[in-house]
Length: 165
Image (cartoon, rainbow, N blue to C red; front, side, top):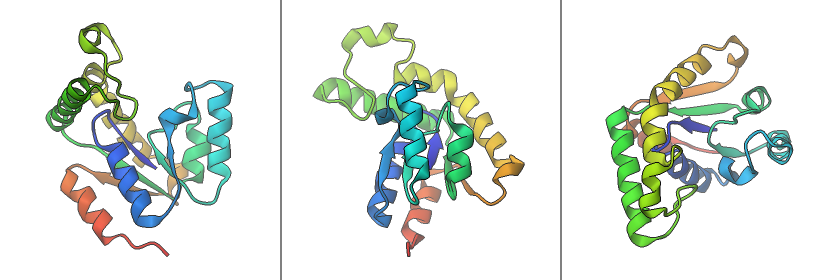
């Protein structure tokens, strides 16, 4: 599972990880409306499978997914880097008028959207940092490998060294 703030590179790392390991990639944003019965059912179905990579934190199904995960990758990058990435992605999405994951072209209406990735990264960065640190301290996850990367190079190095049996 790959977790982190909006703009931290969760989707990019999850895709690369899936390509490297051959494990199926599950995009949280594709599971439906968070907390809905359909979402919870899709999350339970995924967690019951022996192998998967989840792109994003399993909101509303934390216990189920974290207990099934053998590895959690926590992208805990500096706020300035995350904001730069979100600004760059927004510029590409708006100029090219093509979506990137859950990020859709919105034009000027984006300035009023409280959930736009730029605004969301700004206001949620500290919360995601605290959530990741709390996850690392959870006694029930002692058997889960939790990797905290504070710089993109750490994640790239780990991915290069990864072998999958």
